[in-house]
Image (cartoon, rainbow, N blue to C red):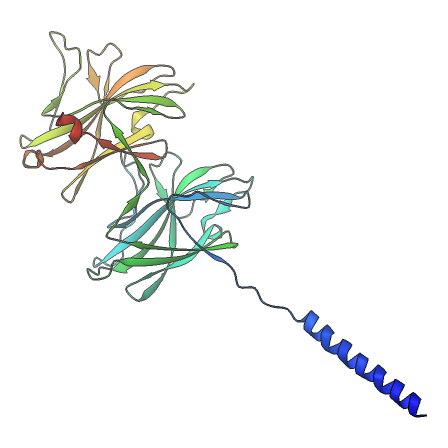
Length: 328
């Protein structure tokens, strides 16, 4: 009888041990999502669905398309005392699905002890228009603006962005509004820019009171500044159209000159194939090589000041080092 009682107790003890171990095994640990820090020098891919990279972060008075050659729509702050924090992401749809913007990017910006929901806008395929309702089509690459409206604050400069992409991956990015980031390459006069649809040679950059054809005859037309107190900063290009389609220069590229607090958009002047005349209209035919003048009028009082010259073509921004060329 004692043996039977001892045997039963041993069984009960073993069962108790087994039950305890099973409880430990079945316990699940909730895994916190990994938050990755964004790097401006890196391109990110989300499960063969999406590819993106940071192009620019800035403090701006308006959200506008990159190419401003033609009439365009833009966003202004609701309150005149406010300003925008804007981040541009080059975004490519790697899938065969169409995505709405809010299904791609979600998040917040933290600035001056306040949290703001991110708003979204997308540029057109030629970077000439802006929309808050357009979608990202399959295999399409576009610029997407992630922005928020904030109160102007001279004392606060740091911004922290928390971002969730495709409802999958979470990222964090901290940046200073004093150090505006722009993904641009520096090019010098004489350099060649090889694009998908063209090859561009940077011929020259000078200041001039008017634009003239390079081979003037006895009679020729020229393009002057609108006012006597102005002078042009003129970037001269040679463009070889390597595509099977005509190129409209106003859609294809954009140039601007930043000096003091002014941003001057370029006027586009196309030289004829024989170099004897110029026009503000026209296209570069398939296989054709043409000279183009990008003219930005500045005040003559600004002529000796340093400015920044940027050329935008096929989704890439190039900073043109032209002032060191002038000083040679």
